[in-house]
Length: 405
Ligand SMILES: C[S@@+](CC[C@H](N)C(=O)[O-])C[C@H]1O[C@@H](n2cnc3c(N)ncnc32)[C@H](O)[C@@H]1O
Ligand code: SF4
Ligand code: SF4
Image (cartoon, rainbow, N blue to C red; front, side):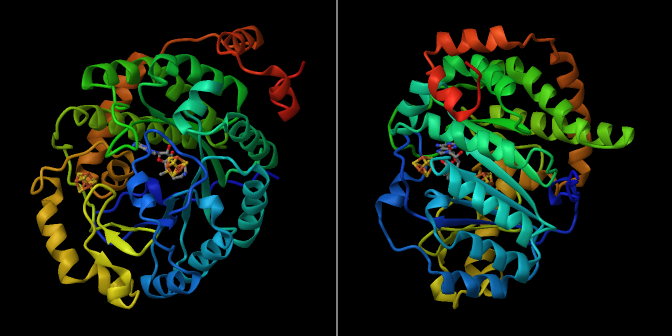
C-alpha cells in the first residue's frame, strides 16, 4: 500500500517565530573534492566531529522542533547516522528530515533509508542526491569519478521507495561554469530517466574551493530559471499525481510552484548584490546551524558565534544566549546586516514565518509559472540522443538498470 506523505512542516504558515529547523553538519569528512564546495575551508581544518554523546546532549536539550537538515561533509560517511536520526525522532519529534548526499554509497543509503522509514514512521524524509551534470561534467565538478555511483544510488532509491509518499527524492544541481551550458538538456534527461519528486538547481554561493566557478548573473540566472520553469511544472504535476483528492492536487501544485518560483525570484535578485527579500529573514530566530566541530551560527553564511561545548551542549541556553540575541539584533531580519543572500534553504525557511507576505508571493509566483509553461517532448529517442551527445556509457547505465540495451 502506498504511504501518504504526512503533513509537511514546510507548508505550514506560522506567525509565531521559534526554533523550527536545525542544520546539523554531521561530519567534516568527505570522499569528494567538489570545485564549488562552500564547506571546503571548514573541512580542511580537520577538527574532530562531534561525538554521538555530544550530539545526544544537544538533542536532549533542544525540545520539540520540526525539521532536521543534515549537511557536511558527506553525511553517509558517518557510521552512527541512523542512530543519531532515531534519537532526534524520539526526543524532538521531528517531522521532516532532509538528507543530502553525494550518492557515492548506494547500498548504505538504501539500507539506512529502509531502516529509518521503519524506525521513524511519522517522519517525512527527503533524500537529496547531488548530480551536477552528465558524466564527465559531474565528475569534473565533483573532483572524483562518481557519476555512475550517484546514478546507481538514485535508481536503487527509486526502486526501493516507488510508492512511498513519505520518502521524497530530490536531485540537487549546483550551477557553475562547468555545467551552465548543459542544464536544460540535463534537466530533461533527469526528468525522463528518474522517477524523482523534484529537481532543484542552486546557484553556487559563498566561498568556493576553486575560484571562478560562479558564473551566473542576475540576468542569466533569471533567463535560466524561466527556461527551466517547464520542468518545475512537470514536477508539480508529478507531485500532484500522488495526491488523492482533486482539491488536494491543486493545493500541492499551488504550494510547490509558488514556493519554488518565489525562492527563485528572490535568489536571482540577490546574485549580483544584496537586495531585500520582500520579507524578514528569520535566521537565528527559527534556524540554528551546528557545524561538525560544534561551532554554531544563525545561518550558513554568517560567522560562528561560539561553540556548543561552551554552553554545556544545551540548545535552549544557546538560543537564549546573549550571543544569539546580539546576532539576531545585528542581522535585523536581513535589513540590519544587509546580508541578503541567495540561500534557498533560508529563503524557504523564512517564507512560512512571514504569512502576510507569503500568500501574495505565492499567488504572483503561480501566475508567472502559468505564463512560462510550454509543452516538451520526451521519449526514448530523445533520451538516447542525449546519452550519445554527452557520451554516457550505456553499458554502465544498463548494468545499473536505468536503460535496456
Ligand atoms: C554541502 S553538501 C553536503 C552533502 C553532500 N556532501 C553533497 O554534496 O550532496 C549539501 C549541498 O550543497 C551543495 N553545494 C555545495 N557547494 C555549494 C555552493 N557553493 N553553493 C550552493 N550549493 C552548494 C552540494 O552540491 C549539495 O547539494
Ligand atoms: S559538496 Fe558535498 S560532496 Fe562535494 S566536497 Fe562539499 S561536502 Fe563533499
Ligand atoms: S539574509 Fe542570508 S546571510 Fe543574511 S542572515 Fe539571512 S540567510 Fe543569513
